[in-house]
Length: 230
Image 1 (cartoon, rainbow, N blue to C red):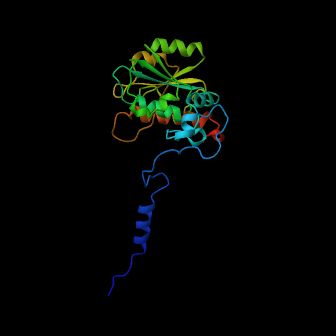
Image 2: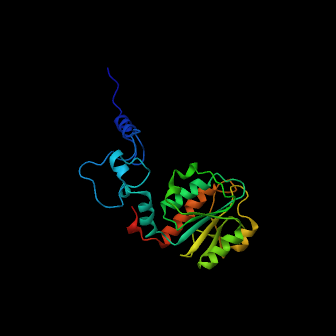
Image 3: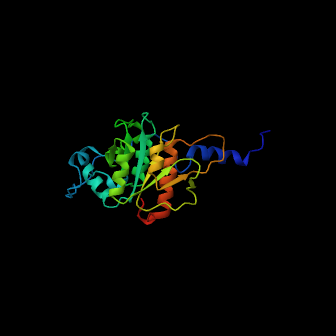
C-alpha cells in the first residue's frame, strides 16, 4: 500500500526548483546580444556594442550606451553626498564601498591615504563612479570645507549618535575608517558629526563595507527621491 502523500513535499520541491525572486537558477549570459533591426542614430550608442552585444554590468536603461554617455547621465542626477574611506593598511573593503556608492549614485568616493586600492570588489563600477584621492584627512577636510560639505564620521565611539535616529546633512561626506582600527584620531576630530550603528551581538564592529552600505542607505531614506530609482 503506497504511503500517504505529503501535501507539503510538492510545494517544497517546487519552491526549491523555482527559487526566490533574487536567486539565479541558471547561469545565463548577462546582458543582451547584438542590436536587432536598424541601429539608433543617437550618439550615446556605441557602434561596437550595437554590433557585438552588451554584456556589461549595467541597468537595462544603459544598454549599448558609450561609457562617457552613461557617466554624463548619472552625473545629471547624482546625490549630494560623498563617501570617504581611510586606506592606510590596504583595506580590502574599498571595492565594496565603491560599488555601493555607485548603486546609490553618490557624488564621489574619496580614498584617503594610500592611492592604490583593491578594485576587485568594485565589480567594474569604478568606471562609472567618480573616485578621488587625498593624501590625508586634512586634505579631505579642506576639500569638504571648500564645497560646504559636512564631514560625518561613522564609528562606534563614546559620544557618537545612533545613525538610526540622527538626521544626516544633505550635503555631506560620510567618512569611514579602516577595518579593525576604525577611524583615525584625525578623522574623528575633523568630523562635524559622529554616528554609530546599533549592534546587538558579540562582535566589536561591523565590516567596513557593510557599515558603509547601512549609512549610505540611511541617507537615501532621508533625502532621496525614491521615484527616480530604477
